[in-house]
Structures are given as structure tokens and as C-alpha cells.
Length: 121
Image 1 (cartoon, helix red, strand yellow):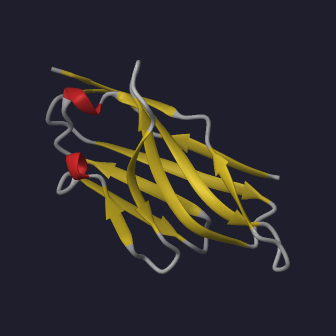
Image 2 (cartoon, helix red, strand yellow):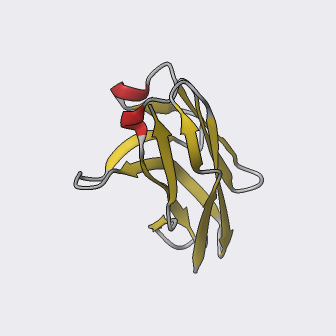
């Protein structure tokens, strides 16, 4: 089994910054893509950013130029640096990872419990 634990959320004023972290633990042979999603009240979950094991990155249009995703393959961790935050960034942010548990296994999708980010105007 694999656990993903996020940290770093909180309350910040518009224009401020936060850094989210995601730590994966458990039966991990390799983590393929890591991603951050967010879900605001009454809205569908949406992809914020993703990064492959090789470092290819994709950002959702609303966060381009403001957010930076990164990962440390050796430590099985990921991060999301969020700058120039806006009230519309307010949401629960969730870490997602495609994890291979053993060399003979296919990947499985895992989610963290989420961390609240609130941006006040």
C-alpha cells in the first residue's frame, strides 16, 4: 500500500505565496507521473499541474506563469510552488501519483487526503 501526505496549505492574502509538499511512502518501486489537482466547493476536480518521472511538465492555463511543479525522484516527494495567488485559487489541493509497487506490477493511482488553500481578497 502507498500513502500520499500533503502539507503546506493555509490562508494567504491575494498576491501571496504558498508551497505545497507531497510525500509518498509505502511499497514503492517507481513513481511515474505526479500531479496536483484542486477542487473548489461546488466545482469539479481539476488538474493543476503534472510532472513525469523524466521531468516533462504540464500546467493548467489558469496557473501558467504563477505555479511551479517539481519532484525529487530519489525521495519520492513532490511540490507545488504557488505565487501571485488569487482568490479563485481557493480550493482543496490534492496530490496524485501513479505508483508502480513492484517491477512485475502495473501502475496504480493514489491520492492524498488534500490540503486546504484559502486566498483572501
